[in-house]
Image 1 (cartoon, one colour):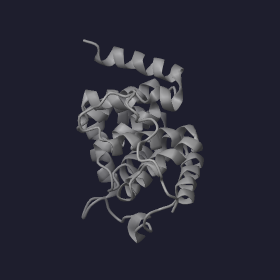
Image 2 (cartoon, rainbow, N blue to C red; image 1 turned 45 degrees about the vertical axis):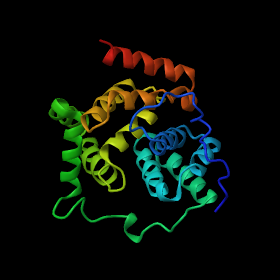
Image 3 (cartoon, rainbow, N blue to C red; image 1 turned 135 degrees about the vertical axis):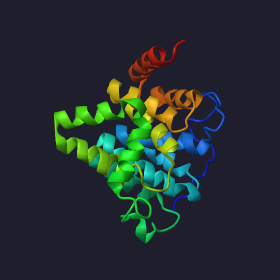
Image 4 (spheres, rainbow, N blue to C red; image 1 turned 90 degrees about the vertical axis):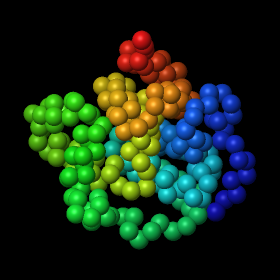
Length: 223
């Protein structure tokens, strides 16, 4: 494994405001998510070097879930970078697949539960809309996306949603960004934590993406 050398993440040098409970580990996870999705592997290398060995399993979960938003090629390239830099311990044998989300609960049931928690009152309407567009996309969204991927152990729903908004912030997909911002709040994130993650947008995706994110934020949260 490479020597990480410096201990301060290059984008956590004081330019971003401190947010209670948005600990450095989770901030770095947000950068891992964003740089995986953007394909900026040089910056992803810096991110991975600043993950403590005990946080690497969470980092892998962040990369794995990002394939839902940015595709397999970006996730695979990010996994390759992580292994090039070094992995503190072998991945556990059961990390490839788990038969059930928890004893007696299928991935579909877990996916339905998580999706309902994230979408709240809009859950039934979401399912109806997805089914109208194509029944397959509804099933894949619930069973694979929210079930087999986002219901995996290793990260909390709150952590996963904060990483998701770090990705969606730069992909010009405003409806999905809005949905997952609301979803992050429903599963335990605070407005300050969401804003803290979105403050990273320019550093990951550029100024245009930051302007769009700021516009979305004002529309949703200005009082």
